[in-house]
Length: 452
Image (cartoon, rainbow, N blue to C red; front, side, top):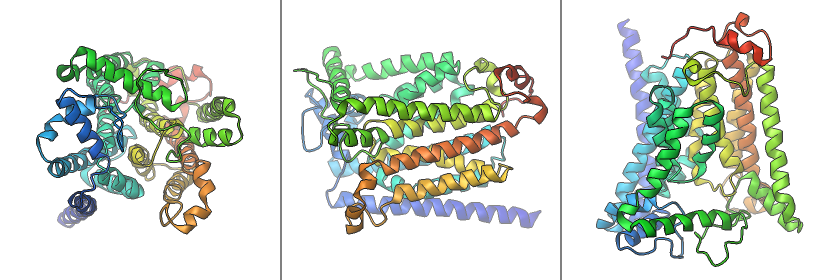
């Protein structure tokens, strides 16, 4: 037993050392950029925060314009008391803490919902592997000094608190959607899954955090800032906002976006058929919805008609919450009109779930699906290998034009859902699920497994 204990401690120390080395590398390259005066996206937040502090317009056009809700500019105001290099260094430290906390929370919660062993070593290994699978995306997030790490932490906390503390879960999601709009995809999901309390406090939190900057800018200016931010969304999808001011968000056809929606917009625009963009995107979305519904039916798991929140503490619902939560965030990235590489750090929800599932699944097809999902994601997000400025990248430009990375993320999500559903169904005895129809649901509710 002593030998096993020492082996465990040495293994844990090795994994923690690996994570520390990983973040030391990220910190080194980012600090070097800061010393060289390259503040990346942080300059946008810093400038907007200074403008808000001085009661000026944070949305004034610049080399890189502020395009987000006013909350981040409000929260960054204390940093403007420091020089930009010092403020950037503090932001880097905070972002590393956000990402590290988030990935550990996600890993532990995934293991818990899958009824797996969640000791410190297992959790740490999953956290390390999840980040290694998205090495470039975590690096990009930290060196660009973006805010997706904070949003990831809020999503991780929401997932953890969803059952135990629904009020806090809703508030965390309300905060997250005031960083960027992407978490809004979870609101209809919460309503469909009958998580009324979480959805209610999501809305309350979103409104409260949207109005919080009024403490500095005043009621009128804050409403103006919100209208500018929302107007930018209309500008992005081609809505004519007239003479009204709007945030300077790139068009959905911009080459920087890797989403399927942007790829379709670029293709139809080149064919002078812009009116076909939304119908084609809708057709792809409906096809994905139909494929997922068929996967649920095949595994005899209810797709829409779930019990109330209190009775979702049994399997397969507990496992399905983790699977659906991660899948929805990934699908939001896939179909967002403007998904650049930096928000892909949110896929740590997906990679953590893949590594949590892999040791647990019993069937060979489910395990193969998870391995295929990890492989497709790794190869898809790193292609073209060598970077986007190489000669090879220019030769394979259609890969970027047609949204190759977005399609790879979509394939990964479908593979993950397929394997995840098989495992979720296996957590309930064969005698408990005998029919694919919704009528099988009362048998599922007969389970007595309590929340860990």
